[in-house]
Image (cartoon, rainbow, N blue to C red; front, side):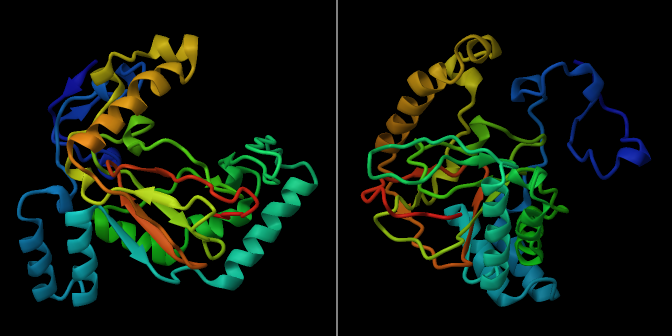
Length: 286
């Protein structure tokens, strides 16, 4: 890997802001271990974040209400935006998405967990086939908050739609993807309907974002493991280690009992997953 300590070319100034600049053409695989351990960290992850928040309130660049949310993010690693996305917009987008499923534009796997489960599996990046979804993906209120959190222009790049709870094991998104510098990834979970407690609500662990990042390299998982065995190493090594972390730090889950239009935005390293679907007949559109 070639690491360049020279100033960033003008045409790349917006793309590169790390303390140590890298030549991406020399990085064969963009895994975290192929990048230098360098900042800057996001402003709300740095020491003195609360003082900086207060300073921005005084300067008038953020409101007192925004300051409260940003302070909560610093301490807990997430924030909730109530009714941030309009109900009519959600209905219009979901109807368009469902039509794409019905006409075969999008094909979902059955993924039946029990005879009582009528719902299909999730869809990765449906916005590539149903551009209407971008109206939610790029919702101005969501992007406004992410810009406040990251102090950088947001770049939305992935969507996942689901009819039902995922029951996915607890994890940090940074095991799947991350950024250089570290910490500039956020996720926004948007409720397309009121979420029932028996539908398998999203579970998250406040404050867990303060723990050290856990990457594949830390568990001895290399790219050959995934190429040859898929998610086998992830299931056998990563998920059990996360459960150990939860026990070691006595972490307790919260559940996102969202109303339609509510949005949960979380930190790149916040532990979260899908809770048990106690009633498989219930949907959890998100």
